[in-house]
Length: 189
Image (tube, rainbow, N blue to C red; front, side, top):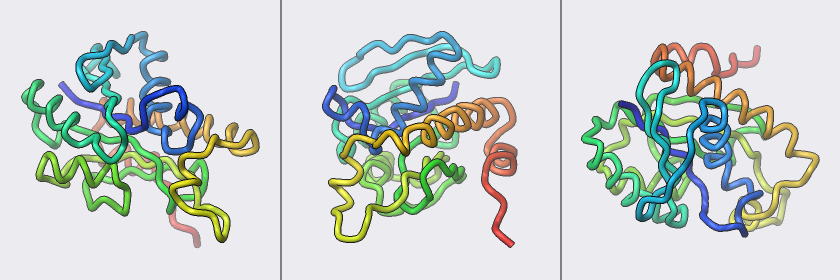
């Protein structure tokens, strides 16, 4: 069993915001493989198979900066090792639409990832980052990530979501190293 966590904020108010990129990806994966989310406590979960392997998809229903305890509870309930977990989230430091897979690491200033690291007491889980870019000069980062994604960026992010789904399928089938080699962009020359 593996666990794919999509980070976002619950509620209709946040559906189209950049900060919900993790939700977008797990929603798209669920649609592709025919899974349905059900609310269980503070998590929306869907169980089934991806790339012929058992998986649980989860969208914490606590706000982003309090998602860690929800994720820790799901990991405990499923008796998973942290190496069987990948967290999908938005990233300000990547250009809009860029993907970056990592096998582990720090929180990179992301409050949802920080909450998970604090709650599971480990940073040894994989991450799939969806680039949303930096806010324009003078605009607050919190306002930027919580603003509705403008239509000029939406197509780019929709393409990134589909690439992220493919990256997750690769992670499930072939592991994090192969997925990183296949989906992380090559360094510029």
